[in-house]
Length: 182
Image (cartoon, rainbow, N blue to C red):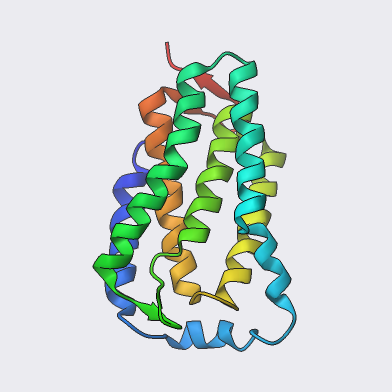
C-alpha cells in the first residue's frame, strides 16, 4: 500500500498525457453503449449515493472513537475533488464542453469506497463489493459523461489518495483487517 501512490499517480499522469485531448478507440467502444440503457449505472457515482455512504462511514468512525480517521474520512473526499479539479485544468481534456480527465465522479466514488475499507476493514467480501461497485460506476460514467480512460484516471487517483490517507492516519490494511499503527 505504501508504494501504490508512487505507481498510481505517475500512471494517472502518463495516461492523461497519453490520451491527449480527444477520444481513443477504447473510449469510442464504450461510447457505443450510450443509448443502451446503461445510464442507470450513474447511480453508483451519483453524489447522493456517494455522500450517503460517506455519512455512514464517518458515523462508524465516530462511533468507534477513531477521531483522526473520522476527520481524514471527511477531508480526503474534499481533497480529492480539489486535486481532480487541478488535474482537469492540467490535462485540459474536453468532452461535451466540460473538462473530463480524470473523472471527478469516479475519483470521489473510489475515495469513499476506500474510506469504507479503512474504517470497516479490508474484508474479502467488502473488497469484492467495492470492486463491483466501482466497476459499475466506471461503466456508467464511460457510456455517458466521460471517456472510459477518464474513469481509469479517476480510479488511479482515487486509490492513490486512499493509500496516502491510510499512511497519514497510520491505518494498516491487511488482507482481512485494518489495524491502527502503534
